[in-house]
Length: 224
Image 1 (cartoon, one colour):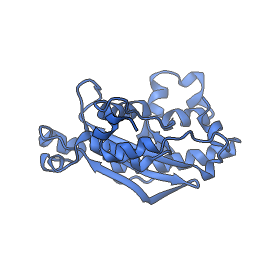
Image 2 (tube, helix red, strand yellow):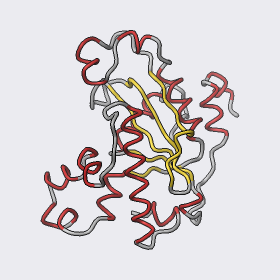
Image 3 (tube, one colour):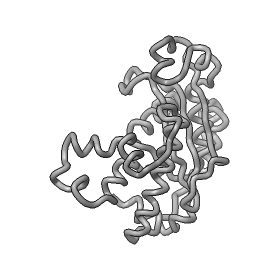
Image 4 (tube, one colour):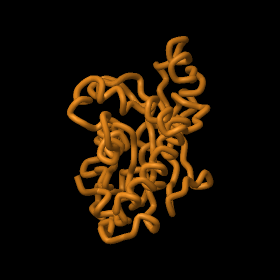
């Protein structure tokens, strides 16, 4: 490894050392997916920060609760009543968390060479990239699947037709609405761990729907 890697958190070095291309011909039932969610102070990438990150593995089209990750992020000047209401966190929780780059590095090491899955994934992946950006050359290289886009791709009828384009269509594919539509029990929503699990259960159902549509390999699933 280049000398600059020596200053990186060890989990980040481990993640980079195991980089490999995911075989596109791999059957869906043999692939490991890591479904994850981040909780942040807001949706502005330039100024908002990461509060927590959680992920759970999906292998063999099943959600594996024993293959899970969760970390709070150290943020000493974030908290108070508003944060507690929105995120279920208080300053004391965040004060005992991991440094942001370390938390993301550990998550990436957990994910390894798996396919990352998230709801509205672009934002979450950008938060991961932002956290490790101070380490020159570090990047998130895993293939990524957005469950909102996957649901739109797989569903028929009015919700994916021209009649549903625009705001109504976007609303239909919010996580809350998809969880309700697919009859998913998700009791601990709006935490990183709760939303990661809800998204994983949704993804499990979408994978089974994909198989019924003749999608059986990683390459077919990743195709846009």
